[in-house]
Image (cartoon, rainbow, N blue to C red; front, side, top):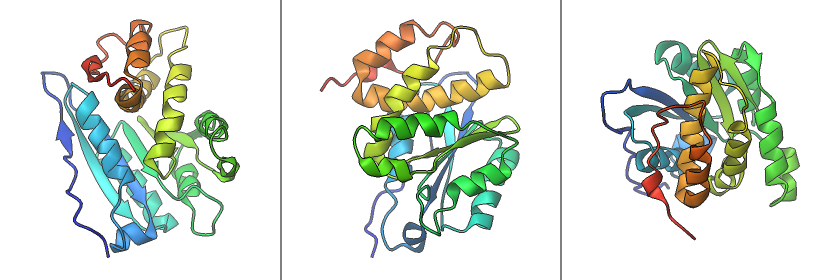
Length: 223
């Protein structure tokens, strides 16, 4: 049976800026049935809480590995909830019921497979089974959907390097891509600042194409 993990706080930040809306979807048969508590989704939300200063809120779902349900959840978060960024965790492996990437591809207008390729390359430094991951990313309307690994540890291992690659952009991005990348970078920096505060501070100084980037660099936590 699942424990009594405290429910995550689904909003945070302050100020007069527009509220950013994020979608967090944990895809897991057992977590959705209450066999065990979801830890990946709440971990991502907690990082938002600790690292992002501007106003934000999260639409959070825990659902089973059913492709039609995953597709509908992604559609609703993009089209009805107007999430600028939708993050999934879980269901990216080779098992028959691991269908999160398939659902992502089904609802996206354009795919951005480079995210998955980069994260797999990074994860291979730590575990050889990373080659089995099928995670990907894509665009639906004004929303970016990205598949993350299923464990917080794997997310931390990959996202600092993915963030660094994004910040090497040489030209300012134009809407709507700027909105996508701004949202994604807030998520990326949540993890980077949590575990690599000095690196995040250095990267922010070079982030001239994202003026006013609302991340709390005081969250530096040296190892």
